[in-house]
Amino acid sequence: VSSFFRSFEGPDTGAPDPDDFESWATWSGSSFAAPVVAAALAREMQCTGVTAQTAVDAVIDAPGLARLPDLGTIVNLA
Image (cartoon, rainbow, N blue to C red; front, side, top):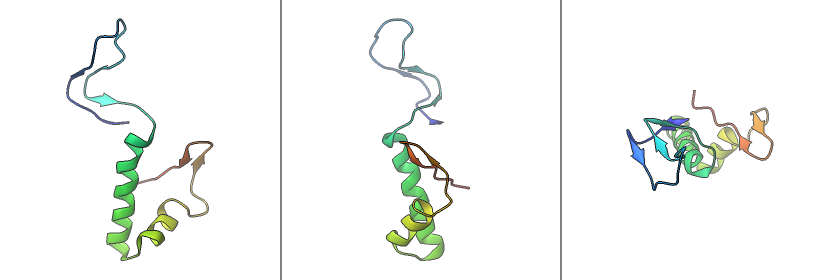
């Protein structure tokens, strides 16, 4: 779940209109996930002074992190 345009109306494709949003949207996929993962990696690097690879090892590849089959690691920003 992420913020979205305050009001968005794409091309009219009939009713119900699948791209008529008001403030929030729920999607999965790399377009939503990439900024979250990049931020988590940048924070890990900034806060701990590690390299990008070490940040990946800690944020994405560490054993014990929750993973969803066919979707990947759950990156928790908490």
